[in-house]
Length: 308
Image (cartoon, rainbow, N blue to C red; front, top):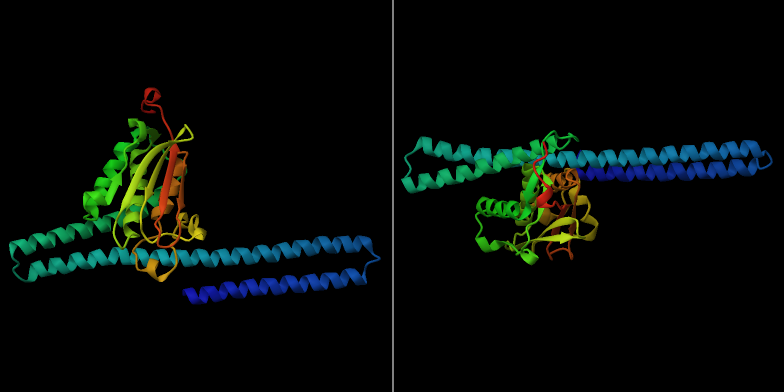
């Protein structure tokens, strides 16, 4: 079912629900007027009528939600299919070229570089899908360790710069006020995934040039806050919460051109919540950039050894 048909189905279900509720109200009012002297029957009729209306409304809501969920899942499958097929096709093309004709050493090295980049992209997509499945398990049996957030974020910035072939000034980590070190307790692998996804998103949604600023600070005395601000496409206010929904991608032609699976920020929010924190988004508006914040419980270095 394509998007146009889904929207038509949603409109149809809502219209049917409204008409059914309107008809039920009309019939019920008429029935009460005709039987106003029979109080007990009238009260029973009102109760049954309320139950009927609630059932119709709930049924309509569930149908609309199911249609929207199917739409997001289809979008996810299309995106994943593209993200998997494109690098595979590219790698195959270069391998066939190397196999069929002699290639100069400089060009051969360039082919190897491109194939490695495509394999990294393929691996990143697979890992993202696998990580989304792992986070579905509410109780992860991994030990949590003390994590230096400045070191972790710096490592993620270096990986992102290398992955997207960006100059060092494209992503800047601002110095921490007071030259303190900020720690949290958690699973380093998961937090690294969250930070990498935020940085990758900031890069992808900055088509006119990558200028990203990251900052770490103490929030409300007991939290460590990471903020990643870009100067990219920005967001309308009604998208601040939706972008953290699984499979969800912001609609619009400009957004449709940007590759993605709709899982990145879903993973960020779930990882933050599994660590007792939260992930939020804010933007001045379309075309004015976005700030993604991850807030985690602050840990005191003196009191934290590895939890066994």
